[in-house]
Image (cartoon, rainbow, N blue to C red; front, side, top):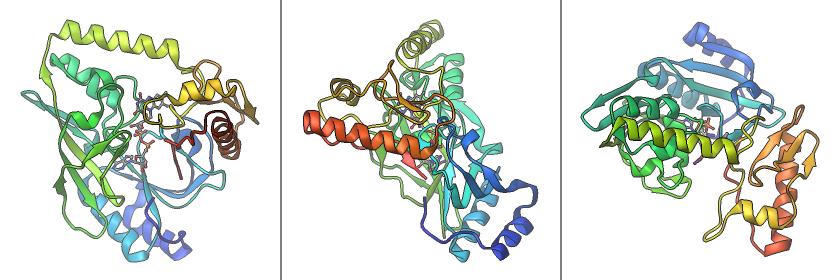
Length: 301
Ligand SMILES: Cc1cc2nc3c(=O)[nH]c(=O)nc-3n(C[C@H](O)[C@H](O)[C@H](O)COP(=O)(O)OP(=O)(O)OC[C@H]3O[C@@H](n4cnc5c(N)ncnc54)[C@H](O)[C@@H]3O)c2cc1C
């Protein structure tokens, strides 16, 4: 989220004049997040090309309006009051994927699922550890998403647009566990991922194996945000939460999954406040039990 003020009425009019049908006011965000909680955005703008993205960021900066970018919402929680500024969603040209040799050029809004599918189709290996991450390339780069291999291990070049800059710039952020040095006001438009030649049959087999593993270990039948807490150095948040006895704890419609302790699921009717309260109760219980203070992985809007 980039700091600024809430959206005023004159700014709503300005936004509508500039972006027409691409703008939706008071747009519910819960259906756009995997946890399915939270209130509306003052405005949500669908952006399909770099020129419009630059124009929108210029608008936000000149008007001092708070903004954020949402990918597939698989790592964010939206407050029940909603988001008082502008939420940017990328689509159109930002979902494109092109392959040259072993380099995949993927748009910032390309789903990781499509990255894995296309890699397999072209007989390229390397992206299999990302399969099942239900986000976009941009969200994955911001979070350095992955498993035993993270997207940062594959990224060779990132194209970004930043507020106040009138051109698309090329950068290569540094990556560490579930984070990157990508500037807070940078929007990932596209990235080059380096893959390797492989056997398409083997690649497909590995994708299937990893998906089956996830289906068996994660509560994918209910809305969730993936891992709620980061793993502390040398340990696993899920192990610590289970050992603190938190599995099955609930708060309103939110529950610590009995299947995977580092997942909170929305059993129906959960609010963001329920999820946040449960997060704090689990954090406190783990601290009491093990002395370790868990850090939240999920971003709160
Ligand atoms: C069932 C499940 C399983 C998961 N498994 C994994 C896993 O194995 N490994 C893992 O690391 N994560 C996992 N996650 C978490 C999540 O899928 C990843 O963090 C994912 O990369 C987030 O991508 P997104 O597009 O959904 O981003 P969002 O959740 O929409 O946003 C996340 C952050 O990225 C920023 N962002 C989004 N798009 C852009 C962009 N184009 N440019 C700049 N910033 C952007 C947002 O502002 C926000 O700060 C899982 C989540 C779920 C629900």
